[in-house]
Amino acid sequence: MPDKLDKIIESKKLLLPILTEIQDRDGYISEDNVRQLSKKTKIPLSEIYGVATFYSFLTTKPEGRNIIHICNSPSCYVNGSLNIIEFIEKELGIKSGQTTEDKLFTLHIGSCIGCCDKAPAMLLNGEVHDKLTEKKIKGIIKKCRS
Image (cartoon, helix red, strand yellow):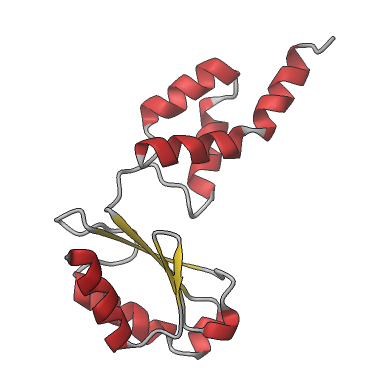
C-alpha cells in the first residue's frame, strides 16, 4: 500500500509534464497555477517555481502568439546566429525575453535545438526553420503578421 511519501515522489516525477500541460492550456504558468498545484501535490511553491523557471521552454509570464527560439549553440554561432539574432531584434523591435507590443511575437535565445547540420536555425511555435538568412526571416515574419 503506497504511503504519503510514495505519492509525493510520484507527483514530483509528473511535475514537468503537469507544468507543460498547464502551459499548453493557458499559454503560460501563472502564480495562481503554481499555488493550486502546490496545494494539490504538497510540493513546495519554491520547488514548483524552480522547475517552471529552470526550463527554457516553460514560461511564467504571458507571451506572444508566435514564440521564436533562436539557437545560439556553437554550430549556429559559427554559422552566423549572432547576425540573425541582431536582425530579428531589429525587425521586431525587441530583445530576448521580450514580447512585441502587439503581442504577436516573443523572442528567446537559447542553446541547441538539434539542427546543427542546418545552422543557423530557430524554432517558431515549435516548428524548425533552418539555414536562416535575412530574406528567409523577413518572409517568415511577414507570413506570421498576415
